[in-house]
Length: 242
Image (cartoon, rainbow, N blue to C red; front, side):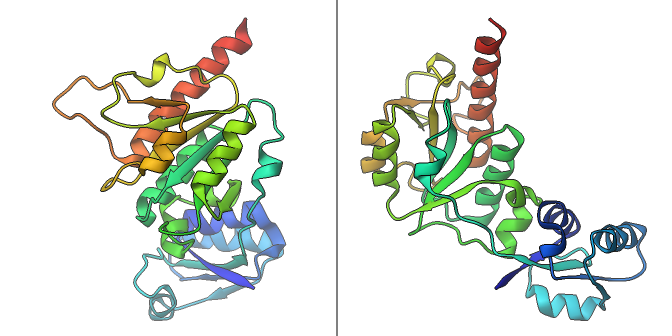
């Protein structure tokens, strides 16, 4: 089985992550960037086909492709049990994030800030599609992904494993800089429309907000996660420097 990857950055990252496991790269002629991508693929032993824009348009079916597509191996789904074996693990948990753009952007932040995994429930979540891959700008190729049957059950397992389960809520009176994030931590974010489900919020060991000082009182899910992850990294650097 293979999956379709669209966009210059996404194809490049798929080649970096999977090498010759990428079975095919399709590239439109006439651009130095695309020519460089073709050479990058060939250097990794991946066959390149020159394709017309109309061919790529049909393949992409409405998703922006930038003149590049690839057939890459299916993304691996990791076990939460294995992820929780790591000391001071850092996980991002998504509670019904259904927008592929937000899902992909959160994955990108998770990879950028060194989170060990991104976890989500199998129901009411954005699917792993070319749109999601593209929204991550290829970062999903480097992420550890954990899809669980029940997010609530998975979070209960995290609590049992001595993780701080820190839920983000714009209405919380305690700000995230007041939460201890240097140890094993799970950052939980809910959807923009509904926020955190009551059952998920009830499991959290801490409910915090991102400090705001302006006319807006909240951030969208992907931005809130980025700020939370930065705070995790900051606290961990302070601890490691002592």
